[in-house]
Image 1: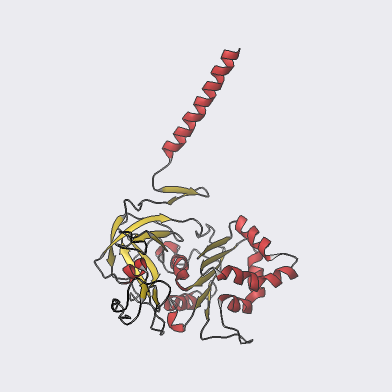
Image 2: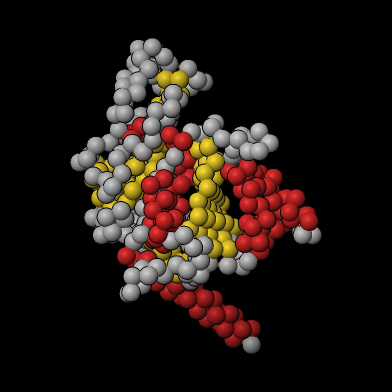
Length: 358
């Protein structure tokens, strides 16, 4: 009997192993299953990246912003041709490998991840390009420097500080200095935190600071611009409300404003946007206008939206936005007999609260 039991246990264990091996064998390379749906995932790695090519932007100039007097005033929109080899979906990221050396002396530089700023079909809608929204990192006379006095030269936008000690972000300057025809090493795609819901009647509240606008732009291109987001009769598949709150320091730093205004004019019932320009605007109490300050003007309306199971929050950019949410909605939550942190946790658990901050 003991021998039979041992044999049976062995057979059962073997069956488990075989099943595990079979499941492993059916896993597709370059794919990950998220909530029952297959999405592209790490098709290209840092050791084996895809060599893409910089191409002309579909509409925007490469430099999106205007000079503000700050060293790091420039944000660029750069488009890469990937030949259809790097498929992705809205809300994902890709990695870029700069030649280096980076601050640790590594060559090539360590991979840097960037949220994708184009929809899945790309700005040209041929599923062969991917676009990034990248802020050029430049720090003058700061704690760190990778250019001593006399070494800094003007960048592609014409900004240079030869009489200063300067730190230039290795990958951000690599991307912002690119020209049409240049090669770019791409990894990915990756990321499942910021994916859009499947339902077309949902509400999407988007909170973005600076280049945190990138995933939001990918959503809006799909919802309001691309053929992929249209019905056969030309109407849009999306029937909910998309509401964007964007924070920047100066009006000269606004990103994709022309697109937002076009969406608002064409789809007034489905799209709203509000800007918080912190160094130029103040609220009625004289406070600087940050995202949470602007949201406070609509706090009751937004709270009602958030109570709906159809509403999703997407947050991308500076980490301070999370505490800003509590500052704005904490008092309203208390009045409703709730505690904001617990309410936010419940939204997160339900897959309605998406955060990617740094």
